[in-house]
Length: 219
Image (cartoon, rainbow, N blue to C red; front, side, top):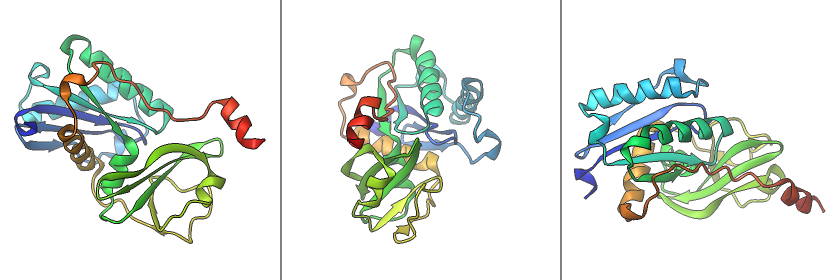
Protein backbone atom coordinates (compact mmCIF):
# COMPACT_ATOMS: atom_id res chain seq x y z
CA UNK A 1 0.00 0.00 0.00
CA UNK A 2 1.15 3.53 -0.78
CA UNK A 3 0.41 4.80 2.75
CA UNK A 4 3.01 2.42 4.18
CA UNK A 5 5.76 3.63 1.82
CA UNK A 6 8.21 6.47 2.31
CA UNK A 7 8.35 8.40 -0.96
CA UNK A 8 10.47 11.37 -2.03
CA UNK A 9 9.41 13.32 -5.13
CA UNK A 10 11.28 16.07 -7.00
CA UNK A 11 10.36 18.39 -9.88
CA UNK A 12 12.33 21.30 -11.35
CA UNK A 13 10.85 21.36 -14.86
CA UNK A 14 9.92 25.04 -14.89
CA UNK A 15 12.55 26.73 -12.70
CA UNK A 16 10.94 26.27 -9.31
CA UNK A 17 12.43 23.57 -7.10
CA UNK A 18 9.51 21.54 -5.78
CA UNK A 19 9.86 18.52 -3.54
CA UNK A 20 7.58 16.42 -1.39
CA UNK A 21 7.78 13.46 0.95
CA UNK A 22 5.06 11.00 1.86
CA UNK A 23 5.89 9.27 5.15
CA UNK A 24 3.43 6.57 6.19
CA UNK A 25 0.67 8.58 4.52
CA UNK A 26 1.71 11.95 6.00
CA UNK A 27 2.76 14.67 3.51
CA UNK A 28 5.76 16.97 3.89
CA UNK A 29 6.08 19.72 1.28
CA UNK A 30 8.67 22.32 0.34
CA UNK A 31 7.50 25.86 0.91
CA UNK A 32 7.62 28.53 -1.79
CA UNK A 33 11.06 30.13 -1.69
CA UNK A 34 11.71 32.73 -4.37
CA UNK A 35 15.44 32.62 -3.60
CA UNK A 36 15.61 29.17 -5.23
CA UNK A 37 13.86 30.24 -8.44
CA UNK A 38 16.14 29.89 -11.44
CA UNK A 39 18.92 28.25 -9.40
CA UNK A 40 18.38 24.70 -10.55
CA UNK A 41 21.66 23.18 -9.40
CA UNK A 42 22.36 19.97 -7.53
CA UNK A 43 24.12 22.02 -4.85
CA UNK A 44 20.81 23.83 -4.32
CA UNK A 45 18.53 20.81 -4.64
CA UNK A 46 20.28 18.40 -2.27
CA UNK A 47 20.10 20.69 0.81
CA UNK A 48 16.39 21.26 0.14
CA UNK A 49 15.81 17.50 0.02
CA UNK A 50 17.95 16.96 3.12
CA UNK A 51 15.96 19.59 5.04
CA UNK A 52 12.70 17.98 3.97
CA UNK A 53 13.95 14.57 5.14
CA UNK A 54 14.92 16.10 8.48
CA UNK A 55 11.45 17.62 8.82
CA UNK A 56 9.92 14.21 8.16
CA UNK A 57 12.44 12.60 10.54
CA UNK A 58 13.62 10.22 7.84
CA UNK A 59 17.05 9.15 6.62
CA UNK A 60 17.89 8.52 2.97
CA UNK A 61 18.07 4.81 3.75
CA UNK A 62 14.47 4.78 5.00
CA UNK A 63 13.07 5.84 1.63
CA UNK A 64 11.25 3.23 -0.45
CA UNK A 65 10.53 5.04 -3.73
CA UNK A 66 11.78 8.12 -5.60
CA UNK A 67 9.63 10.14 -8.01
CA UNK A 68 10.80 12.58 -10.67
CA UNK A 69 9.00 15.24 -12.66
CA UNK A 70 10.67 13.90 -15.79
CA UNK A 71 9.41 16.43 -18.30
CA UNK A 72 8.77 17.92 -20.66
CA UNK A 73 10.18 21.21 -19.47
CA UNK A 74 13.28 23.38 -19.37
CA UNK A 75 16.31 21.38 -20.52
CA UNK A 76 18.58 22.47 -17.67
CA UNK A 77 15.96 21.85 -15.00
CA UNK A 78 15.22 18.35 -16.26
CA UNK A 79 18.88 17.43 -16.70
CA UNK A 80 19.98 18.66 -13.27
CA UNK A 81 17.05 17.06 -11.44
CA UNK A 82 17.67 13.74 -13.16
CA UNK A 83 21.40 13.88 -12.45
CA UNK A 84 20.72 14.73 -8.81
CA UNK A 85 18.38 11.77 -8.33
CA UNK A 86 20.81 9.52 -10.20
CA UNK A 87 23.55 10.48 -7.75
CA UNK A 88 21.30 9.98 -4.73
CA UNK A 89 20.11 6.62 -6.03
CA UNK A 90 23.54 5.27 -6.95
CA UNK A 91 23.79 3.72 -3.51
CA UNK A 92 20.11 3.38 -2.60
CA UNK A 93 19.01 1.45 -5.72
CA UNK A 94 15.37 2.52 -5.30
CA UNK A 95 12.66 2.34 -7.97
CA UNK A 96 12.07 5.70 -9.65
CA UNK A 97 8.61 6.78 -10.77
CA UNK A 98 8.64 9.12 -13.79
CA UNK A 99 5.93 11.80 -13.78
CA UNK A 100 4.73 14.10 -16.55
CA UNK A 101 5.60 17.66 -15.61
CA UNK A 102 2.52 18.81 -17.53
CA UNK A 103 0.34 16.48 -15.47
CA UNK A 104 1.74 18.09 -12.32
CA UNK A 105 0.85 21.52 -13.69
CA UNK A 106 -2.69 20.33 -14.46
CA UNK A 107 -3.09 19.36 -10.80
CA UNK A 108 -2.16 22.90 -9.77
CA UNK A 109 -5.36 24.17 -11.40
CA UNK A 110 -8.63 23.98 -9.48
CA UNK A 111 -10.84 22.47 -12.18
CA UNK A 112 -12.13 19.04 -13.17
CA UNK A 113 -12.99 20.18 -16.69
CA UNK A 114 -10.81 19.52 -19.71
CA UNK A 115 -7.65 21.61 -19.41
CA UNK A 116 -4.79 22.10 -21.82
CA UNK A 117 -1.37 22.69 -20.29
CA UNK A 118 0.71 24.79 -22.70
CA UNK A 119 4.35 25.62 -21.92
CA UNK A 120 6.89 27.45 -24.07
CA UNK A 121 9.52 25.07 -25.47
CA UNK A 122 11.50 27.87 -27.17
CA UNK A 123 12.45 27.99 -30.86
CA UNK A 124 8.84 28.56 -31.90
CA UNK A 125 7.55 25.43 -30.21
CA UNK A 126 5.40 24.54 -27.23
CA UNK A 127 4.82 21.57 -24.96
CA UNK A 128 1.14 20.66 -24.86
CA UNK A 129 -0.94 18.08 -23.02
CA UNK A 130 -4.62 17.83 -22.16
CA UNK A 131 -6.00 16.65 -18.81
CA UNK A 132 -9.34 16.32 -17.06
CA UNK A 133 -9.84 15.34 -13.42
CA UNK A 134 -6.27 14.05 -13.24
CA UNK A 135 -6.58 11.88 -16.36
CA UNK A 136 -4.53 12.41 -19.51
CA UNK A 137 -6.91 13.08 -22.43
CA UNK A 138 -4.40 13.98 -25.15
CA UNK A 139 -0.80 12.81 -24.77
CA UNK A 140 1.99 15.28 -24.05
CA UNK A 141 3.65 16.48 -27.23
CA UNK A 142 5.93 19.14 -28.69
CA UNK A 143 4.24 21.19 -31.40
CA UNK A 144 4.63 24.57 -33.06
CA UNK A 145 2.80 27.59 -31.71
CA UNK A 146 0.88 27.66 -35.01
CA UNK A 147 -0.38 24.16 -34.18
CA UNK A 148 -1.31 25.33 -30.68
CA UNK A 149 -3.43 28.04 -32.27
CA UNK A 150 -5.38 25.37 -34.18
CA UNK A 151 -6.19 23.22 -31.12
CA UNK A 152 -9.73 23.08 -29.78
CA UNK A 153 -9.07 24.75 -26.44
CA UNK A 154 -11.69 25.90 -23.95
CA UNK A 155 -9.26 26.65 -21.15
CA UNK A 156 -5.53 26.37 -20.58
CA UNK A 157 -2.86 26.78 -17.91
CA UNK A 158 0.83 27.65 -18.10
CA UNK A 159 3.70 29.00 -16.00
CA UNK A 160 5.14 31.47 -18.48
CA UNK A 161 3.47 33.80 -20.92
CA UNK A 162 2.48 32.09 -24.19
CA UNK A 163 4.42 33.07 -27.30
CA UNK A 164 1.15 33.80 -29.14
CA UNK A 165 -1.98 35.73 -28.24
CA UNK A 166 -4.29 33.31 -26.40
CA UNK A 167 -6.73 35.88 -25.07
CA UNK A 168 -9.57 34.08 -26.85
CA UNK A 169 -9.19 31.19 -24.40
CA UNK A 170 -9.76 31.12 -20.65
CA UNK A 171 -6.50 30.97 -18.71
CA UNK A 172 -6.87 29.02 -15.46
CA UNK A 173 -4.76 30.19 -12.54
CA UNK A 174 -2.39 27.76 -10.81
CA UNK A 175 -3.62 28.05 -7.23
CA UNK A 176 -2.32 24.79 -5.74
CA UNK A 177 1.37 24.79 -4.70
CA UNK A 178 3.45 22.74 -7.11
CA UNK A 179 4.87 20.57 -4.32
CA UNK A 180 1.31 19.55 -3.33
CA UNK A 181 0.42 18.85 -6.97
CA UNK A 182 3.65 16.87 -7.33
CA UNK A 183 2.71 14.64 -4.42
CA UNK A 184 -0.87 14.21 -5.67
CA UNK A 185 0.36 13.07 -9.09
CA UNK A 186 2.89 10.75 -7.44
CA UNK A 187 0.20 9.08 -5.32
CA UNK A 188 -2.14 8.74 -8.30
CA UNK A 189 0.47 7.22 -10.61
CA UNK A 190 1.77 4.86 -7.92
CA UNK A 191 -1.74 3.51 -7.44
CA UNK A 192 -1.67 2.53 -11.13
CA UNK A 193 1.91 1.19 -11.22
CA UNK A 194 3.73 -2.01 -10.29
CA UNK A 195 6.76 -0.64 -8.42
CA UNK A 196 8.77 -3.76 -9.14
CA UNK A 197 8.80 -2.80 -12.82
CA UNK A 198 10.12 0.73 -12.27
CA UNK A 199 13.65 1.66 -13.40
CA UNK A 200 16.40 2.65 -10.98
CA UNK A 201 17.87 5.30 -13.28
CA UNK A 202 16.08 8.58 -14.09
CA UNK A 203 15.44 9.41 -17.76
CA UNK A 204 14.30 12.96 -18.62
CA UNK A 205 11.51 13.34 -21.19
CA UNK A 206 12.57 16.21 -23.45
CA UNK A 207 10.01 15.77 -26.29
CA UNK A 208 11.60 18.36 -28.59
CA UNK A 209 11.49 17.25 -32.19
CA UNK A 210 14.61 16.48 -34.20
CA UNK A 211 15.75 18.90 -36.92
CA UNK A 212 14.63 16.36 -39.54
CA UNK A 213 11.12 16.34 -38.06
CA UNK A 214 11.07 20.14 -38.03
CA UNK A 215 12.17 20.26 -41.68
CA UNK A 216 9.48 17.74 -42.66
CA UNK A 217 6.88 19.88 -40.93
CA UNK A 218 7.91 22.90 -43.02
CA UNK A 219 7.68 21.06 -46.35
